[in-house]
Length: 275
Image 1 (cartoon, rainbow, N blue to C red):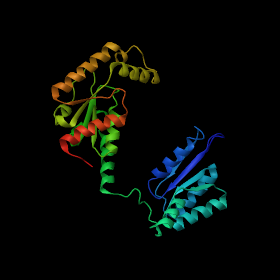
Image 2 (image 1 turned 90 degrees about the vertical axis):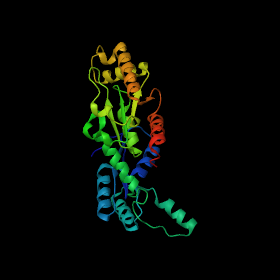
Image 3 (image 1 turned 45 degrees about the vertical axis):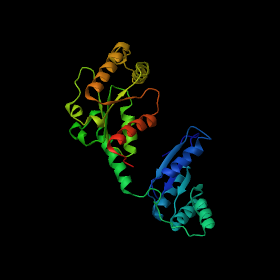
Image 4 (image 1 turned 30 degrees about the horizontal axis):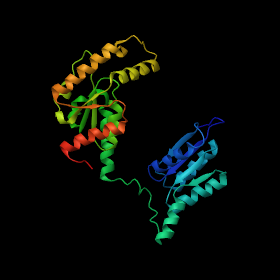
């Protein structure tokens, strides 16, 4: 792994998921430069693992940011880094020490406490896997297992919304409405209260599709970006939503989080809080 002269490489070493260190590094690096590389080493809990990371850091000239709590592993990393001239940053050590002094309590030094493998954690993992398997109309035969199903014409944020909802623990599938094709039976047979129809302002949709075609170097003269066809697709979609009693969500001009919040509120009003 080699870096260009103007790039900087940062290694994050964690005894858990690495999310804490990654977030801290991104927040810091935004103050300095746009071009930099991040590599995360998760579940690093042995002396041999951290020594290997330092070897790699020496090879590419990386800064090593670590969020470890096991004393012997930290000492091994720091010794190896000093021997090899690798710069390190202890992300949690000073804070843990200060808290211990303030509380007059010895810290537990137990790796992975921040992201414990709770039941909720596994539920979210299952939900994400479900969303990936049921993206863009895939695996319709098991779509009935979804908590939430999103449908709408192309480029109405179905996939981003599905993944966000999955991160919140909701098993989510999404099914595209394709011009000239009838909606799949599996979608039409679902509990209507679990299905959400996504709509969008025609001008916004046209802009998004045009940009998409440009990025793919596609023809600008296709029905996909024809204003009349876009209007027709949206009208047909709205009629379908009304005919089947699906709640309509207008995603125009709103962040994924806002649209997801609307869907979650409607879902929980019917089925209860998933926590």
